[in-house]
Length: 427
Image (tube, rainbow, N blue to C red; front, side, top):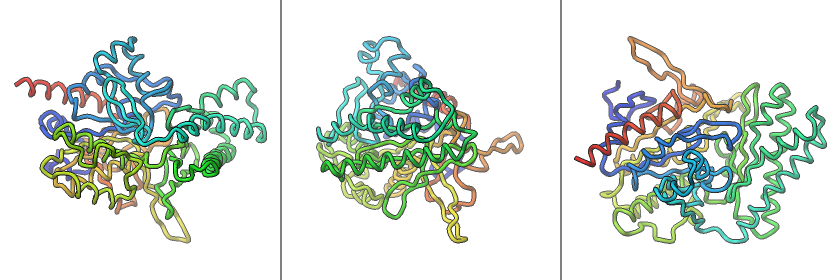
């Protein structure tokens, strides 16, 4: 293993070093994604499973561990229900505080470990518009399949449509995973559906603007190719067996993960010092969305002596070459990229040695993830190629520690760290 400290490594497999950091660091803050990180990626969110042993391990890090996800805590596809199913007793989960604390919906849905949920900064008009969005998506899907010939019987198609509409409270989503499976041999048809779904979400934005909510929402694509010059996310079109963008999430502006990092830090400081550096009323909705401005806000308001070592954990980071008039540029995206990069930059500004942890979720059911490339040499295994384009030598994000074995390998590491930290606390 490298003799370098973890925050200076790239795609290191020094899991023992990470375990020691998690177990012994007194001023620690873990900010972690969920799908693909502590749960396997699946086509149908209703089939997700979470290991109760992992859930219990998070309790050892109480006050030092928060989730940051574009998914949601609540609803029939929320993580809370997955945890309740894992224990078969919702009352037990609530009594023992087994819910995962942190921010969902990209940062607009806050929850504590007892399942108390709030939506700071969201208006009633916005919630009402979001509640009606799934009906708009359903009508759009039905219109598409009525006007584009296919061989699927009506009942089965209706089932596919219902499974592809995620009626989340603050992030209604069109999910094309099942449709990619159905039309995997008909790339042109699936591409047409993909482009149509993008237009469907754009129509929702137009409708919102007409109702006086022109600055309320945006569409998040998973995976994506970063943002264009206007700040809009770029869709990743299907190619061959690669499904490209499958999740079209209609989200509240401000609900982007990098801003959520500041929301969690604000809460973390309050727990330690009794004061909110950004104020008690701070929400991701009234924060800047530019990386440089977010760093300045952090430097201007957070006491360096209290700044924790942050461990950012995610699985969705992309980088793809884009050819334009013979010149290559790189579309850098992925729903975890923004928050991981901000965590890295905060570590550099405050000299806290923040660590970026990457989970390889390519072995899940979704076929839009590039696996890590491994090589063995003298009985040692090394990662020789990461999830991005190997030609992208100037990617500003460095993935310090990698888990090629996916979420199962990561949660075993996490549980061992919890076990050791618990022993150290007792001592």
